[in-house]
Length: 103
Image: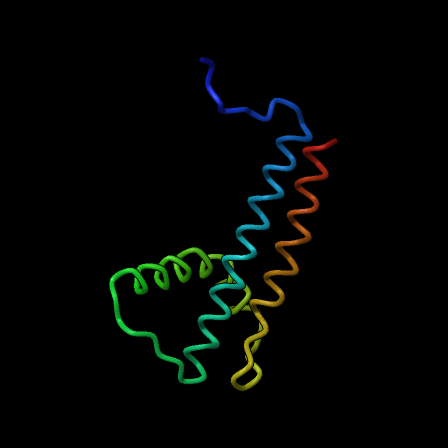
């Protein structure tokens, strides 16, 4: 029996794969924002090893993109606009990269 793994051998398949990666990265950033807001408003989750691992993963994945925007954009009191700007830039860059791959 042949392998069930199908590789994307054309440009459109590769572009779809890259677009999905950008989408997943954007969703991870949104999850990080939601958890940060949850904790900012006093939310607490019971401590466990897996919940700490998930929160650390979201922070480790999101902070490299958010850090440059936080350095540039001023905070407006408790409001941090850097995730919004970062998501917009991520969408624009994702569309450009996908369109370049598609040709």
